[in-house]
Amino acid sequence: MTVTPIPATDHVVRYVGWSLLLNSRVDGNAFVRRRKARTTEPTVSVNWLEVFGRDRTRQLAEVRRCIHLQRGAQAKFALLQTGTSRRHVARSLREDGYPELQMGFVHAPRKKKDNYPEDPSHAGITGLPDPGADPEHAEYVGDLIAQSTLALYPARA
Image (cartoon, rainbow, N blue to C red; front, side, top):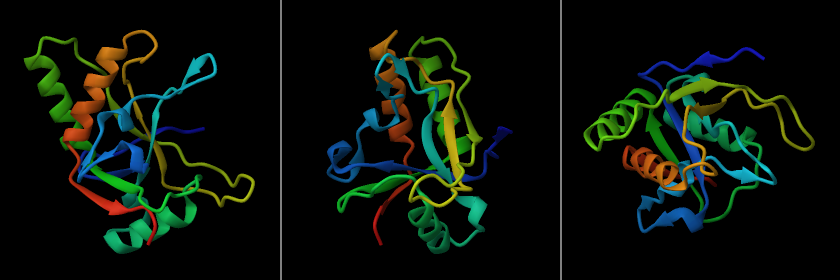
């Protein structure tokens, strides 16, 4: 599989279930790598909007159509601009004396699976701390990414 970096000017959305929404804000745990069984997922899944052109309404409609999960009625998509999020995290870590991360946003399309269509917009946030090794650091970085959320959109139309 070819992994392509997403340009700093482009946008991604992260699916956020209702339990990770605090009023009109995203809980930083939405951006922490999930632990499954005995492993931790290598990335946090997001969807690259510009894969579907420049019209935001069309972009979101396409993500809703092809995302590989069931969307909750109160769930949202958290919008990030990749460059803005990376700069915010890097600056905050530096100011607070944490080591630099190699955080990135990479395109990783998904093939058709079961009842889900192919997802050409699937992507991931890479270089995030392992919550099994350092949960406090992972949560702090998740909070920083959440702070860079530009907007929230309904996960269902």
